[in-house]
Image (cartoon, rainbow, N blue to C red; front, side, top):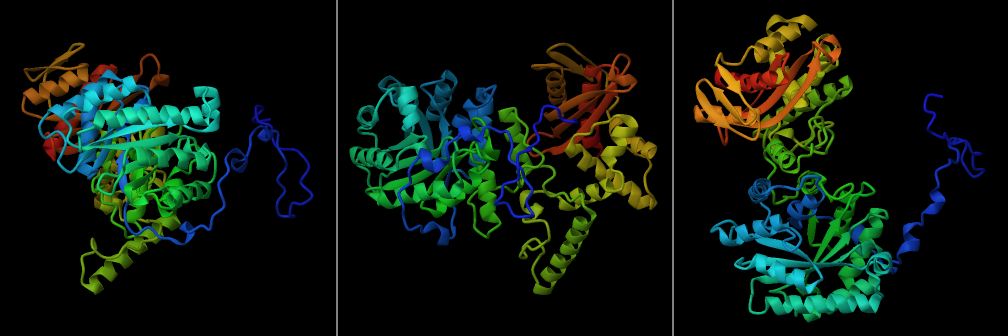
Length: 576
């Protein structure tokens, strides 16, 4: 057997199966799990959400700095938290959950920084802070937010039966008393502070009895004396996905139609992605009455992640609905999120992945090229610029240019890939494993060469182009490095490591360099003793707003290859 650890289903074909379906029962222990309808009862109702359409964006609330951050193997340091906060502001978010100040000194200090630094939080932005239902943690939270003019204090407690019995050891009545006591203390601490609003999350809402959620939420709406000008947020999380999205939508609609003082309640959702349907859950929940959606950029979060706000917002954009957020440079957004989270965004991730606008199939490429031509012709005939004309191109649900992407370059790269591939030739012929974005950048060089010569480029010619464009591009500056220092062309710099120190030395010399990506691998001689190292660096040269370019270096020393890659990027930026 080729896969001895797998147990190919071999049971008898069910007698009720049609002739076209020969699937057989397998050995997976599915009997151990109960279906969702046996785990939580959703009262019957005449659904209204299936007939609705979304015509405007909900209030987006990113939780990257709290829920996303707590899911990281290495939580964000203060600089990364500030970088993420600045990105969220630049994108247009108006309510941002910034931390769990009673649980983390880093979070507490970050909230205090927002509260004390003038102008740190724009006048139209509200920050959200998270706290458990304990008086001491609530007190610590209020110490953190002192001085913030607009803040939502987010109280949470798990309410589902399994959590009540196994984790909290309380019945329904006891748990409601705990929540009420904490909410009363919250209100007491906020007395006399009109800029403070309240939010409650019955964690694992989707596994909690709907009547109990109503009982708790309605009680808090009354306790906090919610009003249209000071509404309470009731946030209903699918903390662990357990059902199809339509079940979540039914649960949301039930609460939407039965919550008291509905005009004084902001109905919010917080889907996770355990079943891979977080986006669908959020979209159907909005149809069912949700007005506010919590999630993370590109879906970071516990286990399989929180719902992806980028995908949600751009799904609206492709339906002609203004998402009220800006994604005009989605690669800069991705680079920032990857830096802050220390996690890569997958190449197939909707809208942002390096491969999402790529067609490897020749028939798809042909359709896209024809679509471009048709789009340009239709725009010209209607007298509007192609960039403003209605978008309708096969296989491209969104104009990549809306996201700051050059779709022509991506397609031409893959047109080459269909004939053997730039990346394939470099890897098989010379052992080079180019990062995807470097493949796209280098493809322009290859395309210019093939357009000028009118011939197919051979593997040796391809490596010659790569060597001339990258490996030989470094300026002929003397340099030397230590563990945390570097000297380049007579200028000394310091950093957390040799490459950071090289970048600092270049900045001292008047060349601003920010390293955005670094990777390296061994080539030659079996990639062992006697092999060379090849390093790749993506850098922004010229400070904020500068040119983003790639550099590459090759040497028997990994460190030397890395330094040469940084200098290669600088040399190419200066050359261009």
